[in-house]
Structures are given as C-alpha cells and as structure tokens.
Image (cartoon, rainbow, N blue to C red):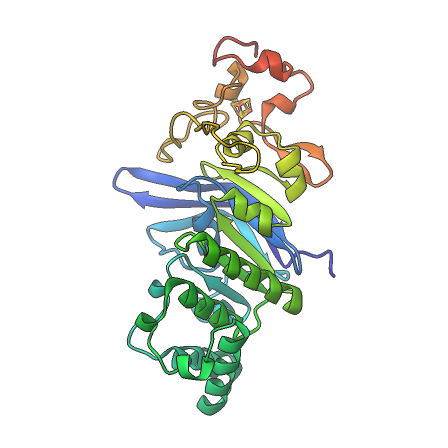
Length: 342
Ligand code: SF4
C-alpha cells in the first residue's frame, strides 16, 4: 500500500453568505485519507463535517458558498479548481458517495437496474445491455436476494437497508478510489446497520478502496475506522489513529463525546453525561478556542488565543492549550473560565 494519501485536504476554509453576514462553516480543516483505509469524521450536527466533503465534491452552491482558502487533492490532483464538467467526470467514477437517505439520490420513477446501468454507460462506456448485466452482478455482490428480479423493481419497493445496499452497488459501479459515506446507517436499525457496515468493510478489503465515514456515532467509528478526525465548530480539534483517539483521547471535546456514549457491557444503569451547552453560532465563532464556552477546563488563554496543534504521539494531534508545557495539570485545570492563570 502507498504512503501517499488518496485524498489530502489542507487548510480548507468555506463560508456561506447570508443576510445576517458570513457563516464560517469550515475553518482551516486538514486531513488525509490513505489507500484501503477508513477515516471517520465525527462531531455534532453543524460542525462542518458534511460541508467539508460536499465542498471537495463540488456540491455546495457557489454563491452563497465560497471557498476562501485551502486545497483538496485526489491522488495529487487539485479538485477545488476543476470545472463543473471535470468534477462531474470524477464524481461517480473516482469518488463514490452514499448519503443518509438513499431516496434523495435515487430517481423514484426509474427501475433500480436502469439507474445503475446508466452510471455504467456514462462513466465506463458500456452498452445498455452490458450495463444491465453488470448492474445485476453488483446487486448480487451487495447481497440483494434475487438480484435479477430486484433490478426490475422501483426504489419504493425496497426497504431502507436494501436501498442502502443499492446505493453501495451504485457507488461501486465505477470502482472508485474513494467512497464518501455520509451518515450511511443513521436511519437503519442496529441489525441492518451492522450488516451494511460489514458489507462496506468486506468490499473495502476486496477492492482496496478508501472510505471517508461521516458519523456522530462512536460505536460505528470503533467498528469501522482506521483513523479519526474529531470536528467542532468547523475545525478539526483532534485527529489520529482510532486506538489513540479511543484510549488516549486528549481534547476535552473528544472526552466529552466518549462520556456521552453508552456502553452496555460496563455501564448498565449509568446516567450518560451530556456535554453542557450547545455548539457555537458560526456567524461569530467564539474568540480563542471555539470550545471554551462549554469546556470544563477552560483557562483565560483559551478565550483569547486559538490553541496550536500539539503532537500527543506520532500521528496523533490535538488543538488544546492543556497540552502546552506550561499548562496546569488536569486536576488543577478543571476550573471555570477566568479562575485559572493565563
Ligand atoms: Fe479549548 Fe482550553 Fe478547553 Fe483546551 S482547555 S479545549 S484550549 S477551552
């Protein structure tokens, strides 16, 4: 496997113009996705995780959206400066996408087999007959029973889990280098969720495809991810290998997410600790560290200066002043804003 990332996002900044002013939805996001690996991007709703990938795919409307800085390279090729036509060729062919609600991506008036075949005709130059044969093979590969019969049916005749399998089949049609899965199992019950996730892993093992998995569910992260990027208020606040994030998580927001996660094996009856407060208004993000209004460890410096990115261990970074050599130790740091020293 190559050490060169399949996707490299650097210092990406995205704003949306509104009547009330500019909303800074993505602020300096950087991450990398490697061949055959899964990067999970986690965070609360509105933290910028979906806007980041939609920007990479050229799916945000401009205006009101605007990329104010940054770069996103797929196998070394800059995506942010491509024309609409060039991006259309890349979407589907080199980057596949699966969304939370498959019905928003499928045409309700077209048979499933025809929709998959159309992708193959456009991107792989197959004839319609070849496309339909391949569509049936892909449906079979994603374990849709009686694939030939199901290919002749319409989306409304499928259950949610089966539709998500159809989306996986469709996204695999062109053998993409990168699959972006945006909350792909959020709408499914846990049994079907497990089956769909296992299917994605199996196909990844066979095809060596890279995956960006966007989710707010840490159980899904633990099951699927090789690397994790934790986002808050439009920024990546902590990133690293999945074991590092789970067992040596450093940023107070990451730890807050973990505390809010149920664990049936160890915590029967435990009351979950919700993170107090709510995410900030990105019209006017807080000064300094974006998490300081909710952070139990906030210090004076946190309200004034954005934390640098500190290396916790090789490949593991966290943007938090508590990692500074002069910061108070955690037991003394748990003081409200204004009570600790700068
Ligand atoms: Fe942010 Fe300060 Fe809390 Fe670290 S300690 S997360 S820098 S507010």
